Image 1 (spheres, rainbow, N blue to C red):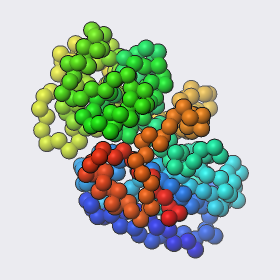
Image 2: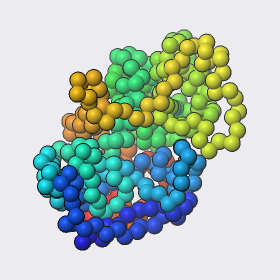
Image 3: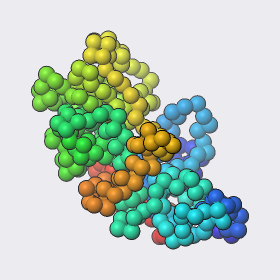
Length: 336
């Protein structure tokens, strides 16, 4: 029997670690027993839950599990599992917990030997940026604007540059500004200097805007800097937590006149279909991202502020909520 430690939110700012008993002998044929090595924090999602932000859909908000960027070691497999072996490291959507059982089909990827668990744990965060790039149809030389430079925005900057875009970013903070420039941004602007951004873009404005922000003010910026037939790709949740709307977010002078395409880009197909039409699916995308990390074309160390023991999660959430020093994300080590 294994006594797993499981992170759970009982309410805003009320994080606990509960014990969950796992019977090692209870595996059915298609299941895998795993021990978490590290898990990365996805700050936007997790801090919103920790701070009591309104849920994204009608649901019972608490108690709730937190986290979904997990790297684990396989310690046992069911009799029907042939594609995975004991000792392999795998990427999963498991929450912050020390041990868990998952179905073999729910494994996202096998971690290559040349990639550390810490770097690999950020792969899905990069995938969100990659999915935005794919949906934005960024071409070589496309002017791209990324609004908000949390970890997802920074990953979108990185992948937009890799796709050949001329990448401009918007933030009011120095640390993410410096990181964005390291990740390939051509220039970073503050929110008080949008006129300079538009001057840099010229009359064409942006072919694609990737917004990771919830602010209606940032939504207005997105509408303003997107050019004719441009796309706004939404990785944030505009208006979340806002009690008023200072302007019409679908004002016809922007939305209708420019014939914009506004598309939610946070989800993708899980697998390719039997005829191969879904080539850019979640699992294949993650495999590609892990390969790029292995080749050092993607460097997740730029978005990792620190590594902490799993038991320090509550303090990490407080640090991220406080935003002092503009922390990006943290890795939780489950071996400490």
